[in-house]
Image (cartoon, rainbow, N blue to C red; front, top):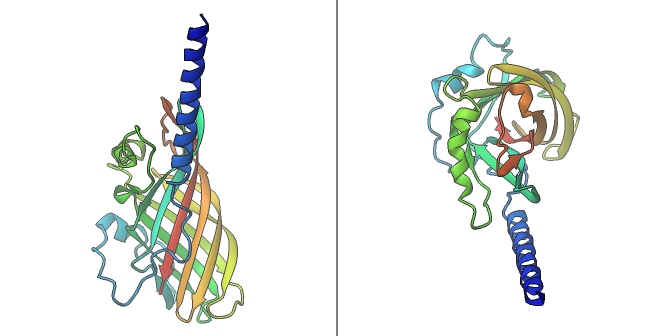
Length: 245
């Protein structure tokens, strides 16, 4: 009987060590938030692939009044999401992270490049790729990419769109980072909801870069989240790092 007790205690100890090890592994293999320094465009960067027709049309002519001054999204921009995952009721410090560099859109405003009258950012969700790593013996994180087709309804709703109106940039020095809090609307699966965005931005001469986040409830957009051995928190963080010129 005493031997059985020791065997049971050892099994619990090894399980605990395994869980702690997996948690440590997962916490060190979750990419950090997108920042202003993530993949800025450079003169030597190869030309991007032409956007899909749906992506090009999402923020196309006729959607907004288009004043003379306009910034267009540049190569190197990316957007994606992160969500907390739990495994068999264990709350891991791990986040599922997927990103897309198929991003298009614009900012338009006055000649002083401070008063923005409208903005539109579109993301092709079909190009989302997982960039985090799961602890062994779990399968590669990239295996979840095949779930996006059904979860996001990509056959009928391949594009997500964010829009905002009337945004004033602060009078920061050229090259100085400044913080913005603003409201907008996001459309996923043909459902549009208001959101609040928090972003750090930097204006360098005729170029503007912004990196930030907003949060949504997946259930409000009819996006189902896994609820089996792997559970996903329905509060999803949407993140972006965008470059305009």
